Amino acid sequence: MRAQIAANILAQLGRFDVPIGIGRDTGDQNMPQYPIAQGYSLSRFVASGGNITVGTATMQAIMEAATPASPVYVIEIAPATSLGDVLAANPAAAASCVTVAMSGSIYVGYLNSSSPAAEYNVVRDIAASQRMYNASWLRPLVTAPLDTTDFVQFNGPTYAALLAANDSSHAHVSTLLANYVAWWQNGGKEFSALLPFSPSTGTDDLYDVQAAWMTGAYVAAAAATGGERAPPPPPAFPHIVTQGLPLRVTDSGYTVIDAVAGTLAYPATSFTTYAYNATAAIGADIIASIVAAM
View 1 (tube, rainbow, N blue to C red):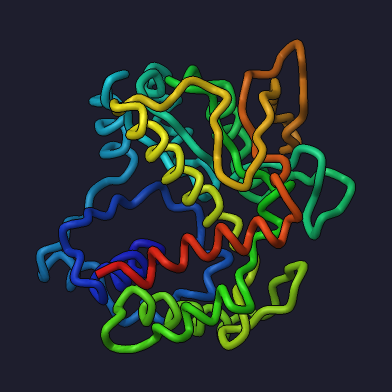
View 2: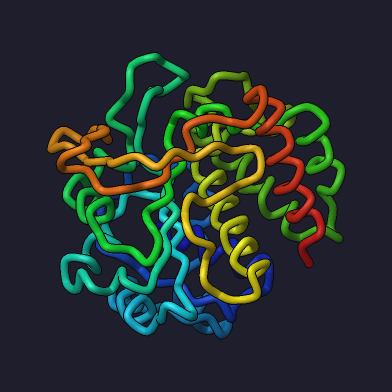
């Protein structure tokens, strides 16, 4: 069902060159976006020139083919089940890869609570998260935890720029907003966020978007050095502050600082300025790239 959502989006954009890998079945929970895609079958995607693979095997092959001079960047924006399966089969697959994950809660919990939480992506597959945090990556794991992702909502003039481009000449924008409307109408409006949201006024809490944007910034920083390798840590991102911390995932799904048993990671724990000023700047960058996409 998640592959159908991906296939439907790719079909709307004519991107049959992008393969889809289907991971291990983890159930159909939290899928209010699915109704917009349920009429688009995977067989139709393949018939149109698309490629469907066994996701975990493909992911493992891609990671194993990476080299330190040409690393693979893994954007981990879900429970780490598939990545955990790869690392269970071959822990060395991480050696030439860089991972940025929407994962964890260091100092702050959901809705900016002062109590850290067992964050969803971690607690849905604790064993996989433990493998991800413990792995020997080419560069230490970088994460976008609740400490900063709680504030990633785009509204006001930032979101207005997206709405203004919602027409037939901007397929990426119209496809994105159509999926947002479907998600909203089929249960997404019941989700919680710090600020009000709706398709006409602004986004919900875009936890995963921060990790994806950080990955792009990481790749750009590597390119700026004249090579494919990422610059040595600490990784630097516009508007965001990362901390080098020894992190461990507990058996109850918390990401804790543990100087003895933790592994060095770089969570994004704060912003360089007022949170909503920082996320507005990040949002403007992201939305400009979507509007410009052809």
